[in-house]
Amino acid sequence: MERSHLFHFPHRTSRHLGTPSSILLIGLLYLLSVAETQASQLRVAISALDSNIVAEHVQSGLQSELSRKGYVAGTNLTWVNNKGKVKSSDVNVIISTSEHHPFISLVNQQGVATEINRDITEFSTPLAEQYEINFIKKLLPGTNALGVIINKNVIDMPNTEQFLARQEQKGMHIVYYYIETSDELRAATRILASAVDVIYLPYHITDMPELEQVVIVAERNDVALIGADHRSINKGVFAVYNIDYFQVGRDTADLLVRLAEERDTFNGSNDYLARPVLSLNLDAAARMGVELSSDIINKATFIIE
Picture 1 (cartoon, rainbow, N blue to C red):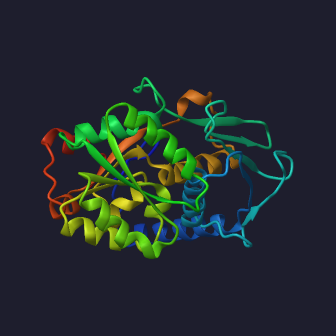
Picture 2 (cartoon, rainbow, N blue to C red; picture 1 turned 60 degrees about the horizontal axis):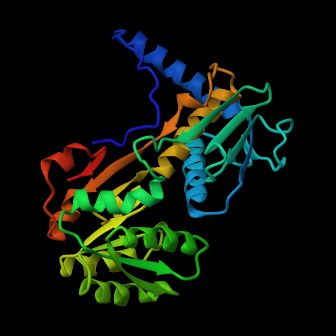
């Protein structure tokens, strides 16, 4: 299954044109489109009001998608530091993880603006508070003890501790293991594996190249691994239920280009919502001794089998 986008553009119908003239026509159209992309210039100002891993993942997805679209920094893409002023950039992008600001705001030189907001309407409390207890209990019934590996050196560590502490108050026993270097990952996983049912890995752990060590130990001890980052599904973590912030960044790039080219009229912040989705790695689940219900599998947006 493919990962769904934040929003969808209408599909265009096509028809067979015949050969060989159709091949020549298609080739000419392709060359023209490439030339147009290479000739276009895009100036983007991007700023994050909050310094954290979520904002970094959004920016990473945005830059990845712009690159895929043919925008190369130093050639036809310029990153502008205009401190919030739109005049020197084609599009100004502001990212904020604060509840008091839009998640992502975009505005072009003509003042046309749009927003992407996180959709948490299905939750009675903020996503970070609700994520652990509800997700784990539904995914792995009978789970009572959750292990968490935390890197002491990351800026998000206090926030991770705060929302996990709230889960413990709701009845989930949490065992922490703090590391300072990635060399400690294997030992941390071994110790937690003997004391918990499932291990949760925050962004700053799944971003580490040594994540494979955690996966190997978890599989050998039949301990389930869940994570915060959807990209960790491809690295051996078996489940993630969260907003896919890298994909949000890619979708932001689509909006950015449309705004720069003035191709659409945007009607306000309710048009684009970033929603939590479920990603599953069924192969990893089997190796960890996890049996998933068909109901859970059917709710997944992205599946590796």
